Image (cartoon, rainbow, N blue to C red; front, side):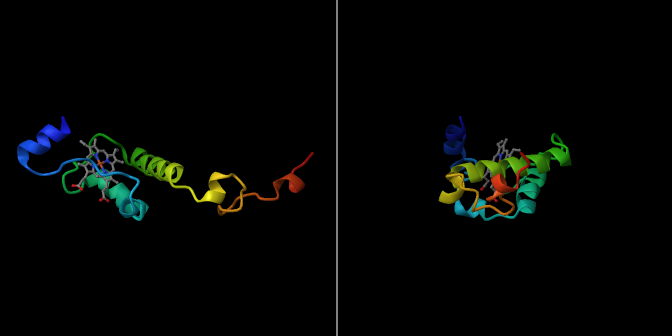
Length: 95
Ligand code: HEM
């Protein structure tokens, strides 16, 4: 459907992938602004989505990005790659 419309008007209108260096490099506020006001060919969603939900979507987009592009040590779950990770929680945990 999208590609048919795209051919009709003679320009690409496919949604952007979240998994590109460009979109991964966007600040959170840019993603929020994109949902709020739209960008280029993407329409605005502020009328349908409350601001709090828009921020929740930004967090979800970040989680999706990480799920497809996690550093090897984070993906392996060794707890050493993330800020706030509890690498030595076993010795500190109450028994
Ligand atoms: C809340 C859901 C959505 C989110 C979080 C979202 C987010 C984004 C982001 C982050 C980009 C990349 C913008 C950039 O270059 O920084 C993008 C692009 C785009 N989105 Fe969405 N989007 C959403 C819903 C939609 C929907 C429903 C449509 C279709 C009706 C759509 C159509 C597009 C298109 C066509 C682009 C490419 C814009 C261009 O480069 O011309 N988006 N979107």
